[in-house]
Length: 398
Image 1 (cartoon, rainbow, N blue to C red):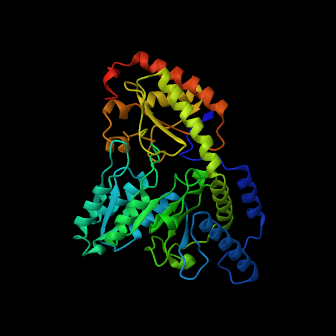
Image 2 (tube, helix red, strand yellow):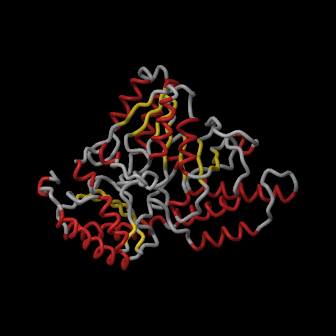
Image 3 (cartoon, helix red, strand yellow):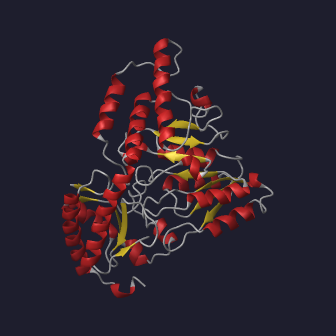
C-alpha cells in the first residue's frame, strides 16, 4: 500500500519510537510527586517542553515566559483555545476553512448563546484580511470594546488544500484591535518554518502525530500572560488549567519528533515539493480536466487537493484503496460520512469539483518510486472514472 494520507497522520519516525521506548522504560514516577524520583521526572518533562519551545521560536525558561499546555492532541488543544480564551461570553471569529474540531467547538458555544462570526477566503483558499478587519472592527466597535471578541482562530495552513495563510498579517490586525489570535499550526511544523514569537500570535495548537511523532499527546502554546479556562476538573497539574497526570514519555518523544522535523525542514520541504509537483504535473498531463485547488497560492510542500470533474470522490477513494493507494476525500476527522468539503465550498468551487475532490499528502519519508507507482495507479482509476463521466468537463476549469 502506498500511503498518501500524511495530513491525517504520519508513521512514527523510528528514531522517535526508540526515544519513546526508552522513556517508557525509565522510572514510573509521577511528575507531580515530591520525592526525588518525582522531581527527576519533572525535570525530564520540563526539559522536553523547553526543547519544543526553542524549536518553535519560543523561550519557555525565562521569567514571565510563554507556556506550553500538555493535552491529549490537536482536537483538545483547539477546544481549549476556542472555549477558553478571552471573555466567556465574547464573540468567536473563525475563517470558513477551519478544522472540524474548531468548527464543532464554536458551534457548541453558539448553541450556548455566544456569537460566531466569519472570515471569508478567496478562490485560492487564502483568508481575506479585509474580511478579518471589517468583522473585528464591527464587533469591537472600531476597537473601543475589544473584550467583545474572545478569540479569532485561523489555521496556519489548510489541512485539505495545503494553502498557507498570512498569519503575521492577521496577527497585526488582531493586535490593532487588541483581540487574541489562536492559530492551529498542526499542518505547518516540519513543512514550513514556524516561529511562534515572530508570528505574534496569542495561542497555537501543536500536534506531534502529524510530524512523525506519537499519537495521544498535543500542546497548546500560550503567550506570556495568557491563560485559558479549564475544561476539566481534578488535580492542580499545569496550574490547574489542564489537570491530570502528564504523559511524560509521550512528551519526551513528541519533543524529539518536533526537533527532528524542524531540523530537517529545509531538506524535507525540498523533497516533498519535488514529489508533490511530479504527482500533480503528471496527473494533469494525463487528465487535462484535473483541477488543482489552491495552485495559485502558497501551499505546503506536502499537499495536493485535486478534482476530476464528473467523478465521485467516494467511488474514487474506494477504488484507489483497492488498487493500493491510501488517500482521503477531506479531513480525516470528518471523512467517516464524507460530507462535501466545507473548504472547497468556501472557495467557491463548483459542485462537480467538490464532489470529485481527493487529497494526496506526502511526507519526508515518501519516495520517488512510490510516487511513480502511485501516478500509474491513480491514472488508471481516473481513466475508468472518466469513462463513466456524464459531465461536460470542458467548462469546469472556467
